[in-house]
Each structure stands twice: as C-alpha cells, then as structure tokens.
Image: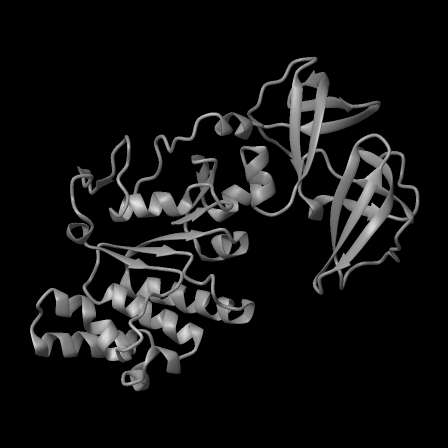
Length: 345
C-alpha cells in the first residue's frame, strides 16, 4: 500500500504514527483487530526504512544488517545465518565486508532493506526510500523492491510523492491532501475513476471542465460552459437541469486535428497552440480556446500524423464517455486538518 500526496499532506506524519514514533491525538491504530496505540515502537515489531537509509558509517554491511538482532541479544550462530540469508535476498553476497561509503546509492538502499527485514517484522514501513536516487537507478530499485516484496510476503506501507512510482508499485494507493484521505483504490481505479478534482490532477494530468447542466436524457447529459454545449455520458450520477457539473478529461483522450472536423462529431472546440513539449514517447500540446480556457493534449509521438506548430489554429474533439465526473471537496480540507478514518491492512 502506498500513501501518496504532495509535500505537507501528512504522509510521513501518518507513517510515524503507525510506527509509534509520533503519538496520535485522537483515533486508533489496529493490527489484526487489536489496538496497538499503547505499544512502544520496539514492541510493535514493524520494520522501518528511511529516505536517508540511516546506515552506521563505521560498520560494515554485515554489521549494519546484524544490528537489530544484536540489540535483541540473539544467538551468534543464528545472527550469522540470518545475515547470510539477508545478503542473498538483496543480492549483496559479496559486499558484506564493505563500508556504506564504498557502496552505490542503490546498494545502500538494499542494505537498509535487509536490516529492516532481518528480524522478521510484521509490516515494513518505507518513508520515501528512493528519494535520493537518480531516475534510472530509482527505476531499477523499484523493480528490485517489487521482487523483494513478493519473496518475503509481508505488507509494505510505502510513502512517496511520486505519482508514477505509486502507480507502478502498488496494490492499493491512499491519496492524501491537507491531512485527509482523498481516495483509496487500486492504481487503475484511481487513474480511470478519480473521485475528486485533486485526485484527477495529482494522479496523472487532467483538464477540468466546470459547466451547468442544460438537459438530461437518461444517462446522457448536455451541459454548457460559457456559450458552448457539450455532451457527457454518466453512469451512476443523477443530474437535473441547472445542476453544476465538474468533469475531468485526460489529455490523451482528446483528439487533435489541424483541419475542421466533421459536423457529426460531438464536443468540438477550436483553439490555438501556445506551447509544445516533446517527451520522446509523447508530445504535450497546450491549447488556448476562446470560451473554455486552456487545454493540455497528449499525442503519441510515433503515431502523430499532424504537423504541430506554436500559434497554429486547431480543433479538439472527445467522445461523450471520455471524461468523468468529479467533486471539488478539497477546499474544505484546509479548514480542519484531521486524518479521520484511514486505512486497514
């Protein structure tokens, strides 16, 4: 499970409360149905991995990994055996006698993981453990961490502000903002069906459309923004005439064309390209429209059939089921910071 949110949203505070390093002012934390609020950190039997690794610089890799068992007064033979097992688990068998400064960032991270796992914790808590790594190394360690997770079969609670990291690594994601949980779900659920404006913009990118319902015909809604009318297919939501409606539209679900589109197309907007950014696999295009404001559109670079230039006049279209309705509830979070009912594992 990944706890995801911007800086200051409460991610690390929540993790420290779970670990027992911070005391909660209200509420409860339960493990296997029993409250652990009164247990000291060392009695909770949770492993912890910090962003800075917190390795002892004067100790070798073996000594660092062995430390949790040393302070627990474990038998010498058992400690040596467990250290060997951990070195094999994190693929550092030949690095046992090195000091932390003789290791790369990714290797230091694996030592920190081995040290956190050696005493067989009930849960492993990870506070932005890959934050100090460069992008390529970060990707490699993410893959190693997923493999490690499958091997040890433990619950990992992982804190990050990186959306791609959360989507690629998690079974479930908790999105936080202003000390509150915004939404909990699988990566696919959060990307395809975010429930709020914040969730839709924090997981990926979204164009937010704010309109007023003009007509409802079953699951088909006709809504207006300024003097333009658009169609939207809704599933479980109920709307009436003059209701406010907020929709999130992913940039990759918008079609872009230089020429005038066919008259039978729905949801048509004319705009002017104000910025183009090339990302290798995709091209991000910022488009300014007359009545609806600025749009972000993403097209696949290899399959792009249009010659796009700044200042160019283009047409945008999207299908009635491309967008999804969202709520704008985050503003109320600023008034009262509270975790409320959170997560179970």
